Image 1 (spheres, rainbow, N blue to C red):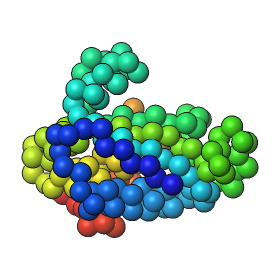
Image 2: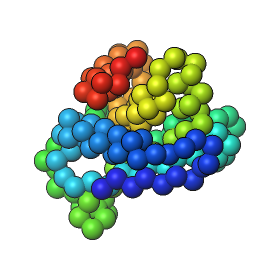
Image 3: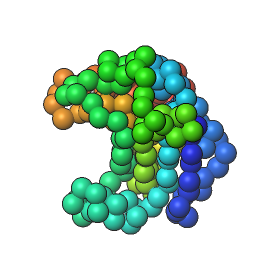
Image 4: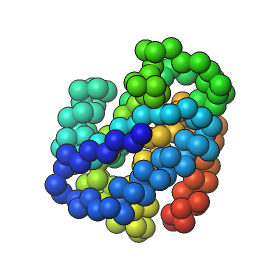
Amino acid sequence: MIYIENSQDKVEVNKELQNTIESIIDYALKEEEVNIDYEVSVIFVDNEEIREINLDNRGIDKETDVLSFPMLEYSDGKVFKEIYKGYKFSPIYLDDGKLVLGDIVLSLEKALEQSEEYEHSFLREACYLTIHSVLHLLGYDHMDEEEKLVMRKREEEILSKFQLTR
C-alpha cells in the first residue's frame, strides 16, 4: 500500500504524477525483493515545510529536496534483500499485516526547480527523488564513494525501466 498526501499548493499534482510515483515505488520494491505486503507514505510538501522538517529532524535549517524516514534498521552497508529477505517480521513492524517501510517527504517545489536546473522533466526529477528515498528506506546510502556508486546505479536502472532517463 502506498499512501500519497499532497500538503502543498505550489506545484500541480496530477494523476500522471501520482500513478507514476506509485508504479515506480511498487516496481522498485519488487526489484529489491520486498516480497511481503508493504506500506510506504509519500508526502508532497513545499520548500518551507521541508526546511522545517529538516530542522526538526536533522538540525539543519535549510530546504532540501527529499527526506527519508526508514522504519527498519540495517547493519552497516547491508540492504533489505541482504537482511530481511524471507524474514518473519514481528507484529511491531506490521500494520494490518503490512510491513511499514517508512515515510518519504518530497518537496515538489524543489523538484521543479531542480528539473529546470538539470534540464529534464519534472516527472523525471520527482521520480528520481522518490526512488532515491525508497532506496534509503531499504538501507542504501551514499556516505562513501562505493555506496554512492551502487545506489546511483540502482536509481538509474529503475528509472530506465520507466524511460525516465536524463
